[in-house]
Length: 304
Image (cartoon, one colour):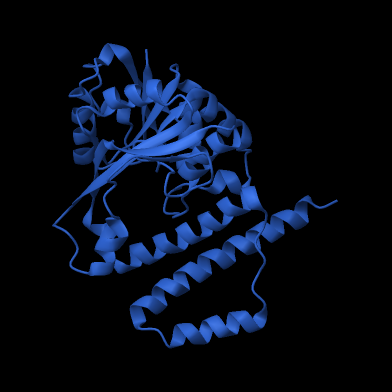
């Protein structure tokens, strides 16, 4: 089999998951060429009894009891049998040629260790009216392929639809030790940490391989209306800020904390901002500060 297609899911919306599976069922690449792994990350209702995988000759449902996206991804890496792993979220609807295109890129760009494409978005209830929410969820379209062997965020594939070589995924799994800050990246319950996908992709760069994104790889990201609320987005921004600070520290060292005067200057700058920008800036600052505190605490514990 050429690919292992992996869905990590925790208490999914079943109407979304049905669409995810239907899109996989309609792939141009024969299902005899890839396996399907459904990682049930301790869902309240077991997915094995609710999802019909009988249409696929190489499908398995596996339960991972430790809640958290990183734990689910690590379990998937252990279970996968193919040389290329494709991570599909439980709200990702792949274009019909996604898997076939993944195999083409795998053959033609052997120097890439991880790659992905671009997301289109389908919003429950229609696009948000607020421009900042549209900008948050809908980045500019990817017009041409981009790849790099540096830690380049523009070239780094997101977890949605990420394709990664098994050797890179295994190296990433070796680096994620239980209880470490690295293992805390990624969603867990109501937690909003993220960036475990970029950590995984950047492992390719650690190994001397490249990362890339291709406009020919397309998927639709289904966005429920509760992800458009101010509260959700500010918590998400805070989680992203936390996670990106940790991600940078993993490879470049712990950033310096701001001195008290600089913090006061930033505080008074925020007071002069419009309410929306002030809320966003505060979420970013709070996430970064929490990460720096955790990083310093970890360094102090590890010191002899």
